[in-house]
Image 1 (cartoon, rainbow, N blue to C red):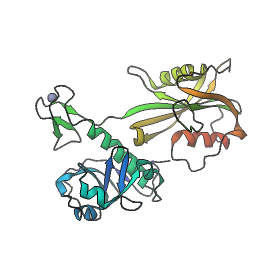
Image 2 (tube, helix red, strand yellow):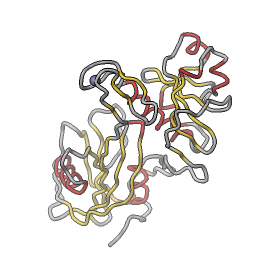
Image 3 (spheres, rainbow, N blue to C red):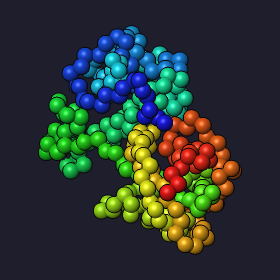
Length: 277
Ligand SMILES: [Zn+2]
């Protein structure tokens, strides 16, 4: 999965005083795109050659000894000196930890861009010197990075599993039931509520599987296995889904080496490696 990068190590600690080195990497996002050098993130040295100064680079994180920075403002010179690609290009990079780097950088980029002004009083914010936070220059309110937790649940009935397709995607792949945790709700209650809302099924034996940071949509995904409880008739939520079916184990589409939790769990089920008791 995306976050499984061993033997490499992700270091999220905030180090705003770390001086950018020539070989460090810079994530340059603009709208829904990313600016690359060929098929990789440009280095600090390459951006310096395009007129970028260190004070335009925001420290993000480190993977092993390589620091990743965000370019705060994209100039025409930078735009012309790099290659434009959709952000999805970050998911397809061959180096094992680059997709995680891209997802995490994109998550932070979107958070930074949406916190340039204070949500309390509307004044501009500035980077807090000590913590990863944006601080209001007028009222002092602090905003910290936001993670949106969501659940994924694989609902089973023996050798069958509920697979769905989202209504709002043009070419949706099969997926599992998923949804955001509401304010004031336990994770298990979210799992039960989403199963009922999306496919009208009562479930039991809810069992934690694992979790995954998914920066492409600013989420933390939390995965569960469950079994149908009683009637297995699917009543589909037509606003959210265009298809919801019980699929036999051998008909589940193969997704070996999936980056995401949903398709990793589908693959475990297909191979009969889901927990049985
Ligand atoms: Zn304020």
